[in-house]
Amino acid sequence: MTNKVSNRAIFGLLLVVLGAVIILNNYFHFFKGFKSWWPLLIIIIGLIQIVKRSASLLSSLIVIAIGLTFLGKNLEWISGNVVFPIILILVGLWFIFSRFLGKTKQENLDQINYFSLFSGLETNNQSQNFQGGGVTAVFGGSEVDLRQAKLSEQGAQLELTAVFGGVEVKVPEYWQIHITGTPIFGGWENKTSYVQREGVENHPVLKINCTALFGGVTIKN
Image (cartoon, rainbow, N blue to C red):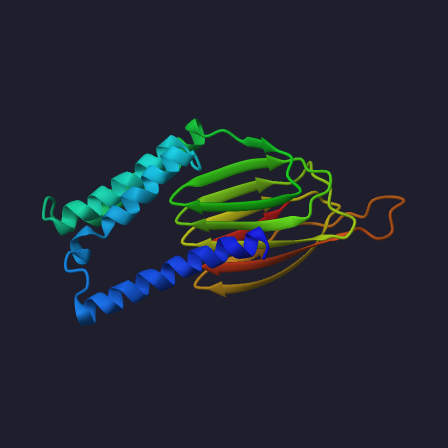
C-alpha cells in the first residue's frame, strides 16, 4: 500500500470509527459524557501537531482554540450563540496571519504525501524525478509548487483531496496534464497551458485525480 492510499485510508477509518462511536453511544450509552467531552479530540489533535511539528504553531493553536470553543459551549461556559462567530474569527485570523508567519518549505522529494487538518501547507518541490503522491487538505489549504521539478520518464499520478478546504498545484508549462475528478458540492479547475518543448516529441504525463467535497482544487502554471 502506498503512502497516499494509507493517508486517505487512515482519515476515512477515523471518520468510520467516530461515526460508529456516536451511533453506539446513542443506543447503548457507552460514553455518557461523550457529547460533552468530544471536543477534547480536536484539542488533542492540536497538541499532537505541536509535538510533532507537523503544522505551524499558529495553525496548531487555532485548532486548540476551536476545540476549547466547542468544549466551552458543551460545558455551558460560553453561550452557543457565539460559537459560530468565534470559529469564523479564528479561521479568519489563520488566513490573515498564516501568510505572514508561514514560510515556503523547500523540498526535493520524488514522492509527496501531505495531509493538512485545520492547518496550511506551502511547499516548493524541486525533485528531478517526480513520481507523484497525494495531497489532502481538510478544513485547511495546501499549495504545492512543482514548477522547478522534473517529471519521471514513466510519468506520475497525483491524488488531490479537498474537504472544506483547498489544494493548489503549480506545474511547468511543458508538463502534460490529464485530470479526472469527483466534485461533491465542490469543484476542480485546470488552468494550465501545455507548451511543446523543441526537440522533444513525447513528454511524460502527470495524471491527477481530484476529489472535492465542499472544497476546491486548482492546477495552474
